[in-house]
Image (cartoon, rainbow, N blue to C red; front, side, top):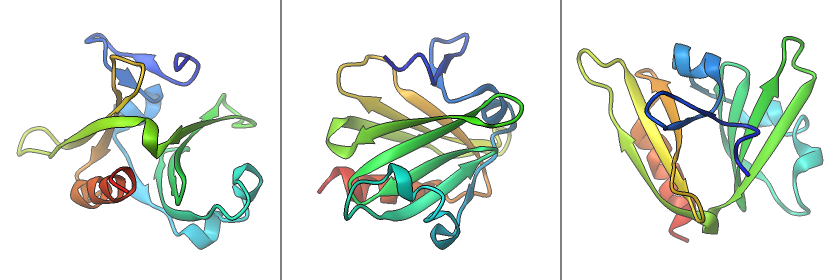
Length: 140
């Protein structure tokens, strides 16, 4: 079910795209700048509350779900939107960046799957803030 937007690395861990895994690059996005771009995939009365760009892909936190946006191909015209209701997230973990390990990691387990979705971020992203955002939605 998740294989269309995810890749498995050598350790069997799910990653969301080759380039963002290699570059480990993420930054917070101003939601007012993307609200119109993603309005067509939102439900009535659903609103974007937080978003992070990962190279071309995005993590979008709405008041109802987590949306993983996977921009595919060289032109980026093909886009997959993976919707994860917060109630489907069974647990998650973060791993902070170290002195020699420059990447922080977020792992999200979805009900019905054994392998987590794993995302790597550079140390410029506040992984504690991201974890706090995810916790605030999943613990409602």
